Length: 299
Length: 279
Image (cartoon, rainbow over all chains, first blue to last red; front, side):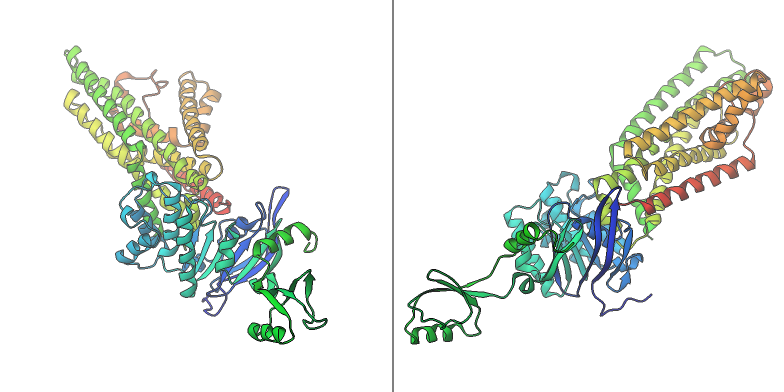
């Protein structure tokens, strides 16, 4: 079966997995469009890693189907252009970093020049460690190597499961830059991370899992609601601001198209304007809100 | 392609892990010890006739070769576990198995690499041993190639079983169970020989059944038969069948076929087990 090039990078439908009596994943469906960065969020044990493993053919789903880059994931060729950094990242300790990359390039069946392989190591800050055995690497360095492994075979879909769990703040910043560069190159990314700030900064869409089910999904704008404008005002004539929330001298209104025009209008009507700032619920607030206050809403 | 890549990787793993060094040290020790032992046979019993020297050389050779077959079997069975179950447990398998490859090709690659490793070891150690025996007591086994092939077959059978266990249980446990079964079959084989010698068919049956269930002991007996001088048995006559280091008859083609089928069957089961396993 030939791959359909305009198909989504990932199409997963009604995935379900039960481990003995515990249902780990229950009817999860989602898509990742080409060039899109999808963030996977949820508390521990929500089923995020199981979803990723089922998607990549590492775990057999009890039910459901997955297409990767236009091919069913039961066909190994569906993974030709997929790069994966597992949550549990380990690489052959008896090989050197360069040999690990060479092995993955060979298994991927892609021609990657020595220079590109060195570049992949350079990209994650391991350029001068290519000849060192992985057995002597720290956890952070192994995770960096894992990133290079995920990126070396020119993937069209990159799946990163907690890519910064072992990294220092500098390493996290490197990963963020890397994600942004992937996004620029129209590489689809599925990012599972507990660092909500990172997800909010780089993801186009977010999928929130809770207890094996999809608790919410959508673009950041959809999930976080419309942007708002917070104002601190004195001397406001009744009815001037239209629909708004008021708390003393603090007003919150929907973000207008033209903020300077609104301020000019207020001043013209004799209102004293002390402060004007854009506001939006953070993804973290929204996530906690979804997980804490509406646990049954999506069941 | 994938199969060869994984086979090469497995050989590289074997050569870089401590197992190779341990094997080399054990083998050199055993070779040195046997060289000393054989030279003593010659020195102490200088008055042996050529026939007697052959008997002694042939018997001791079988004893020493048993040592190598044990090392090869233990070595590969304990390599098979970490190589498969260990990679699954540690997470090494995760990134590898998401490449566009099929699981059976990874398993077959590992199997080929391990078989090459085991056969290589048996050949190097065996030929060195033959040379030592030849130089010290002037004995050369009648069918060295057949014998070494059968030893390689024995190693392959045991490591295949080790791989099958490694698809289901932990790396160390898979090695221990495989080696335990290997030992049990050998003992059952000895018990069976005793039964034959005493003319007790039901006890003799134990050896036959165990050699069918796990062909390592059967293959070992075939190898012994290939290493020992045919004149030896005629000379000693009956009454030595119970010796675990003598074998009265070569293997039948039917048994060799069964051993091959058994190995392929276990390899197939291992592939199935690995295919169905959640990583």
